[in-house]
Amino acid sequence: MRALDLAIIAVFLVGMPLLGIWIGGRQKSGNDYFVGEGKISWWVACLSVVSAETSTLTVLSVPTVSYLAAPEAGGMTYLSLAIGYILGRIVVAFVLLPRYVAGNLVTAYAFLGKRFGGGLQGTASVTFLFTRLLADGIRLFATAIPIKLVLAAYGLNASYWAIVIALGVAMVIYSFFGGVRAVVWVDAIQMLWYVLGAAAVIWVLSDKLPDGWFGAAFDAGKFQILDFSSNPLTGQYAVLTAVIGGAVLSMASHGSDQLIVQRLQATNDVRASQKALIGSGVVVFVQFAIFLFIGVMLWSFYNGLDPVKQLGLTNKDELFGAFIVNELPSGLSGFVIAGILAAALSSSLGALASSTVTDVYERVIGRQLSDQDRLKQGRIWTVIWAVVLIVCAGLFASFNRTASDPIVVQALGITGYTYGALLGAFLLGLLVRRARQADAIIAFVVTVVGMAFIILGLKFSKTDSSLLGVDFAKAAGDKVTLAWPWYTLLGVAITLIVGGLLALRHRDPDPKAQEAVAAKPRHEAA
Image: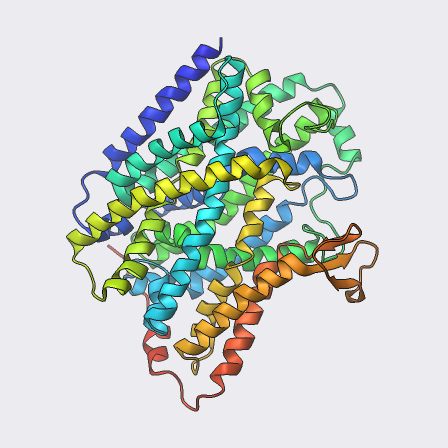
């Protein structure tokens, strides 16, 4: 029976890259390869943004979040983050997007180069490359989980390394030949695919659950959305933490992360990119709700048993994948897993390549490449980043057994080290006219180092909800860390404070500030 599932998966892995190549067409220039010549409709970019930012982690790990949530924590408090995400996107849509699109910039970091200079542009780009590599390494590993389960059910024991290599090869094919246009369209198709798969899972699960399951889950607090009781400093989904932290995180991820900005730049004009960005926030909220609801249904189906200790899984994030493989009928199981695989093919390779070529490589060689040379270098770096990403995903697979958090929380935590510095640099350029490049670079470096110290060393007493419970220690059994949604906001604050104080040295505004900050949106395309 599993042969049908494997056949569907195989057809998908071959068919989607070919579809991407066909959609992308022939790439004639570096601009076409990196930003698609502005030919993407806003709704396609909207779905692509959603697929790029949540995809596999949402499908596999968000159900685990609501499944494992303690009764007092609430099963759907993760949705509070999505409220903040919408607010953050609105700010980015009207503050940062007009600068990117008006200036016809290839990357988000080109704005920093225009405002401050090439040194900060390169620093921000390298930071993005490192952060995106780690986050997407986790994404690719997460996608390998259900494939391993399917192959095991068919009697094939494939390693995670072998699986991520196969996925990486499929991912690089259409990114190499089709450019950003192929990536955006395939993202949109794949996002619709896995949402249909989620609907099928809910339909099957509803027939397997006992009468009264909904009421029992409600009484257990599984449908609680807003958490007013947790400590805002340490509670990841406390209302204040999730909404404010989620908003600032969304501002950073959608205003200073080239993975998202590249998709928005591929639209027709400023207004189209704004609709795509704000619309993506609404879609993400609905998507989170769907997969959190699946997690609650799984909690009822498995009676809340521990995924590792009682259900015998290798790690907690295999929970949803195990249900798909073992409980869904053959054929439907393959369809749903193919949708999850779509997430791995939501490629960040184009964003990594564009940032490498325009923000780093051209700075190193000291000249701007021609369009044809940009296209050539873009494809070379697409392959290089694919290899590095595969290695990173394999390493995550090797060491993830000891991780205590769901994969989605691990991925979001990684961004805490750098997102604050990235967003802070953009805001420093917009808000502090006196700030020069040296001020911004020093503030950037101080923020990254400071956030590493805070994330790794700042601890709070579990029993003390006040600031007096703070302690600096490597580890202690009665200590907990600062909630990760605060990381980005804290990083932004450090960057603005340090950069602002350094800018006081200068009497006059930076001459570069006026040109960069005063950019006005170009006219909408006819």
